[in-house]
Length: 144
Image (cartoon, rainbow, N blue to C red):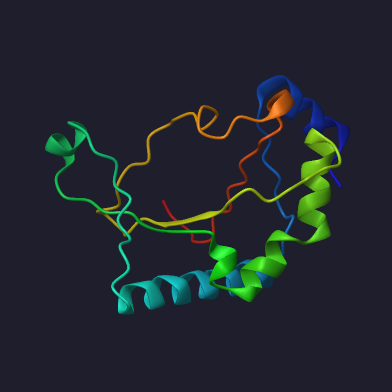
């Protein structure tokens, strides 16, 4: 699925940007599902704010970032998306064949008041052999 240049970039730099792996229609459908998940969680008063604590809040004021863990548990469409061969084969190109879904997170940053999500390292929480854990990030909404 991935070409040699993409694989080499991942090996050298630890990341790769893969454009156009999914169609606009697929991503639009996922965005609708995303909105539905947030709406259902809000309706049922499920805690959603994932704003990081810290002194940075003094400078920026009140912000928020909504989240849900394990989106595949809330949406069959997201489950199908996460298990598509074009996604799992792309991951396998980078880390080898035994690709497994560990967990997922959905984040929504409201316009103009979305909380920052600082750079951080998850490895201490999810250690894996041979540095084989990867994060895939899918941006669904246009933004500036």
